[in-house]
Length: 321
Image (cartoon, rainbow, N blue to C red):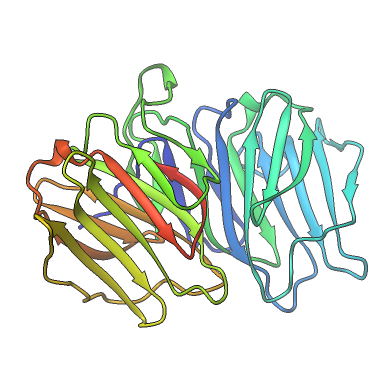
């Protein structure tokens, strides 16, 4: 089965560094960029740039530059018409650690970029260059990237996205409009209860991004019918067992557990994203862009599945469907 991203959710997984991830149609207020990765032990510096073109030397709307040389600090700047602007610095509360994983979220606001690192507000960089000019996210330096994801944008017909280095075609949206969806919801509390407008339908993708804290034992995703309190899909990550259990709860009884999977991507202290696509006959589950499992429908009336419930030892950074 092939990976299909959710509407308005465009990920690039495990790119070589340096890399560029396209931003189709420019940025607009309400959009966000998520970057997850790891800082190697030998790191000196790395940079995340919101570029106004796909090549070196183009204008840079935001230059985010952590430096590990002596006094750890983060430099913010812009690059326009061949010259760097005035540097802004944050020296306290350095959120990056050599050998550690991180998640960086750039929220696009009308007045500037709100930067969140590891779930905590870190800095706000006021716009110096119109956000609509941004064409790509450019990452370079001493860093390993797990994913770069643009949330809330549209793409023209045939524009490529990337999944594990392979190209695929994205859907088109009229006039570059943001499609109607139940999200994104940024940094929601746990437990999370989300209403699915109109219920589940075939060819719909649900995305959950999060972090597993050290010492976490388990977390779950439930696709439920609020009218019957039945669970069509129970996706249960059990860290203490090293297993991911899938099941259903119908007519007051749990069904047969399914546990088989090619790998276990859920590790305490690391970030992940889960994409669940509701096919005609089964749920198709991807984790970090890789095929993970399928679960055949046991609850046939998909439109009655109107609630997504998330609970357990997890910190959520985004839910979108």
